[in-house]
Length: 263
Picture (tube, rainbow, N blue to C red):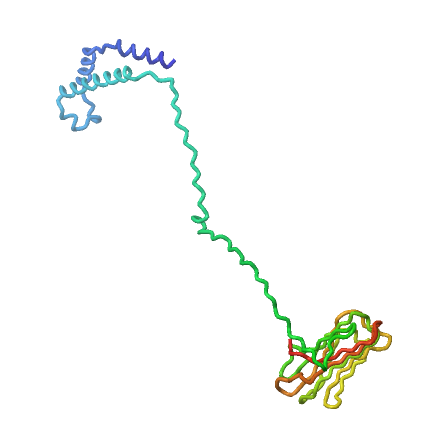
């Protein structure tokens, strides 16, 4: 339909022959009319009528020629559909490497192989002719408690038995080195199973635990401790001692010895 209209307009434009005489007559009649003063500016009234007629004629001819040329020169519409090129998808920016985004990542340190260290055992009292730390089912060790001070001390006895004991007497003997006075004692066996005394005799403070008749000490390791004040200063335990006498199914057994350095 568009092509048919365009073709008809082009034929009409080519067949059109403008009548110049008629156009000039119309222009002259228009110029001969009395001018309308309220629509004519002073500048227009100063022009000669001949000049106005010439200008009007030229404008009409030019307008008609431009209209025809526009109709003839307009190309027929094209059926081709132009499609805008598709916008390429945005290219994802490469992810920053760890070194650019967060700084250089140092490799995890490789732990050094563990070196086994052996802690030297606390020294035990050196057995002498006057000590016997082990006998039969009994084993013993005496030591000065590590919490002892220049005013107060505690001597400890570790006692172990591998057979049940039906009779047991434990003595801790504290030499009188100056102002030695009893401040208490304790053990890890039931209190009701023992008779406990602490008394000074012959310049020695003696702590004694005696198992009551009919009671039994089961297999295991136990602790006995004597606590006391003493004269100000570092006290020597060289003259302190202990003795244990016990009875088991394997027969009687006795151990004795001294108290080593504080632990």
